[in-house]
Length: 227
Image 1 (cartoon, rainbow, N blue to C red):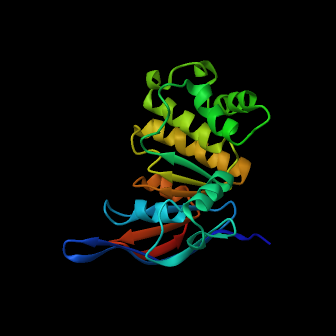
Image 2 (cartoon, rainbow, N blue to C red):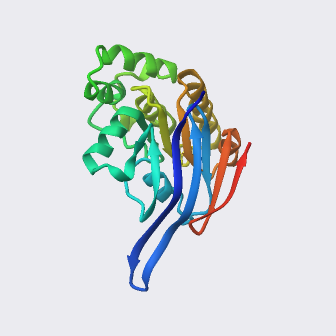
């Protein structure tokens, strides 16, 4: 029986402001089985990135719980949450967040080296070839195009074969054709590795590819649909 790899129960996030408590997220609940895909959609300021941060344990909710890969994140301290992320999670961001001082191969090797992988260079090469960058292995990442940089970021995110991949606007800085290529790669690797995808996106095409969509408005969950 497929188990829930990620679930949120009554998640809320409030922060102090000059006018009292400001509610950024209000009572969000859902669950995902291993290998599923979820698009979190909504306008700017609706709470999408806040929700993603709570789901990944980068921040703690004001109330409610998150269970990630069998761990109740609210019961863990910061170091323990970091250990859960290292063991189970990959990230892709709109801004790529690659290390400019390293080339493409070295960027992908880094998480493998940190995880103590037996042959990080071979694994990194395989992944970069998989995303179509066999001719760019030794290129400094700051000399790559935006689409190429996002491919490096994808290869790096999938390097340790995470159970859950969180992606914040993965096609946001790309033209539509390049964005489509990245989308195809995301779902191909989702299928090949059985990785659960959680995507924050404004891209309707990307959202439609996900099995579920969760729409936020002003921090509230207004709709959850199966595509």
